[in-house]
Amino acid sequence: MTKIELLSIIKDWGIDVTPRTIQNYAQAGLITVKEKGGGAGIQTEYEDYAVIEFLIAYNLMNNNRFNMKITPEEVAKAKEIFSYIFEHVAELKNRNLVEKDSFLSERLNIKPKDCLVAQEYLSLYGEFIGDKKFSTIAKYLTQFYVKVRWEAEQ
Picture 1 (cartoon, helix red, strand yellow):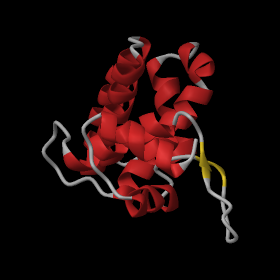
Picture 2: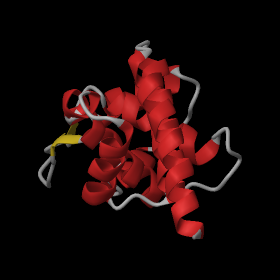
Picture 3: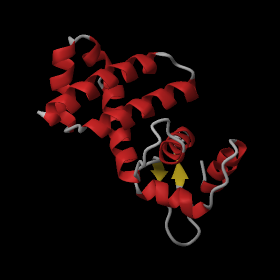
């Protein structure tokens, strides 16, 4: 998908952004680039799911339910956590809560706010694609957030 196609779809969602915004999101790792363009009229191609990634990132940074400032770096971390969980969901499903906690802690170095942002990332992803299994994972991240926050305060 080209930048123009991506902008058109985003505009259909009622969000008016510039091509530079798309470029900034890509540079920050918030949306996935399929093939990087270069000079001589070669356009950058974005993955089809970059639309969902954009909408999630935009909502997190501009309209999140926590009413907190979320930076592009924090959204990128949430995307990393989401991707990791998504890739390892079968492996995580077969673990108890304590094993899941250590599995994520050791591999992702998650801080309390990371849990909240990742939880919201998962919830928004589930809403956009209409799949409720992501809300279950999001609930787990909420429990994990409470544990990590408690440990950080000790």
